[in-house]
Structure formats: structure tokens, C-alpha cells
Length: 309
Image 1 (tube, rainbow, N blue to C red):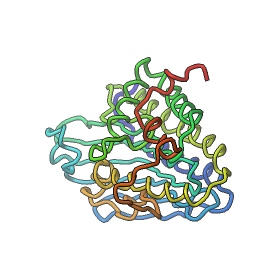
Image 2: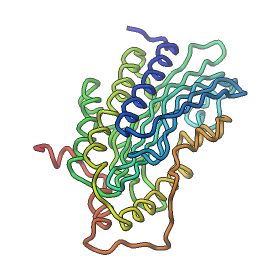
Image 3: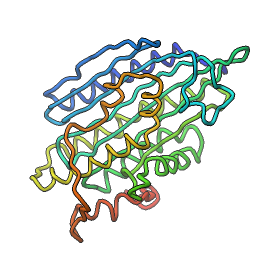
Image 4: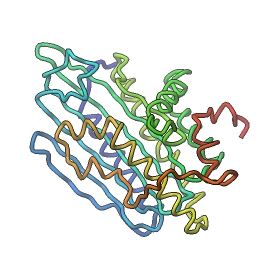
């Protein structure tokens, strides 16, 4: 049982996770491949951005690895840890957002990250964070159940209530307060995760990271060849606006990246290539578009309601 953080092991895992996800999604697309853009950060550290554009399945996707360091903790990381103000730190993680062409394929987001700060004369303080969430434009019960069932399976070895706690945290976090609506159908979100047992905490982060592609790939395969028209495409672009609003107003990762002098291109690669805003748009009652917000985007308990599926 290890209690001291092993940053090298975490970095090796994250680089392998990035490679695996890009390989799986690239094979699924079958047309475009992920381009690699390695970059250095003048203040310390760097990263590798992997980006796919204009594929057969994926209109735009980014899978970003970063490992950045600094001499003074940024404000976004010390709000709840004032004792770490001024401490040298390092942060590393894999963060991804995938925007498909087909409106029947949901957008997905995932992130796993690791942070270490070393106050002068004290032991290193570490924590893990991350999770994943799904943003459909047209919902399907079986997709939502599969997504959450996979998330629960990744959490189950780490406590009976782990999935429920982090599912609720996700519902609360990925919420557009100014719209009074969820961003999507949720998944998992956790932060400040440190039980004092580094090996167990690292194993939990790996379980979440490894389960993302198992949750997303089957959904993409089911929906990527579904026929659609201008109406569905227009609605997809309209709903993508919600994604942009969340990332620019609320997202902690975006805020931390910008405050810590991160690479802007990598931080904002999560934004969709095309999007639209319509004034006071209200879906027609009884349509698939109306059902998205009336039925799917309600923070419901997918496994409790569909446990027999």
C-alpha cells in the first residue's frame, strides 16, 4: 500500500490512455486520423494535443494530454486550499471532447487529472479528479442506460455508494444555471479525490479513464449511420450552443488552464466547429426536439428506472 504519489506512473498511464482512445476512435471513424501537435509551455511543462477533423463520423474531436508545472498555485486551485497558496505544483491529465457529424450521435466529454502541490517543509499534497458526461441532441433510452451502467461498473469496486455520489456530483456540476437545465444526461464527476491511499486512488482514476471508451464506442456504432436531414442538423448546431456556454462560463478546467497560462489552442479545442444561437427558440410540443429537454435532460436515475433492460 503506497501513500506517496508516484507522478511518473500517473504520467505513463495518461499517455497510454490518450493513445488508446485515439486509436479506438480513429478506427471507428475510418476516414480521418488524429493529428499530433506536441507543445511546450514557457512557464514549465507542455503537452500533446491529438485532433481529428472532418472525418466520416467525427466532425471535430480533441484528446489532449498536458503536464504543466508552476512555482505558485493559481487562484482557481487554492480557493478551497488556502494553505497551498504559493506552493510549487504540477498538474497532468487527459481531457477530451468529441463532436460527431450525425445529430443522432451524442457529443461526449471525458477528463482524468492528477494534481500535486508541495508546500515548503511539508509532504506533497495530491488529489485526483475527472469523470465523463454525455450530451445527446436526440435521446435514446438504451444509450443512456448503457452509458450509466458502464459508469457504475467502473465505480463499483470502490464502494457501493461511489457511483451514486459521483453521478449526483456530475448532475450538479454540468448544469447551466442561467438556463436552468442540465448540459446532458450526466455520467460521473469527481474532484479533490484523496483517501490517503495513493495506490487505491490511482486505481480508481484508471478505472474511470479506461471505462470511457467502453461507454462511448457502442453508442457511436449504433447511431453513426442513422439518416438525418437539415432539421436535425440545425437543431444539433443550436444545442451545441449550450456546450459552448458551459465551457466558457463554468468549466473548471477551462478556467484553470487560462489562469495558469496554459496553451489557449489546447484549452479551447473542446469547442465545436459550427454552432448557432436562435433567439428564444422553443421546440414544438410533441417533437423529438421537445422530448430532449422534457424527458432526457432531467437528471433522472437511468439505472433505477431501467434496471431490467
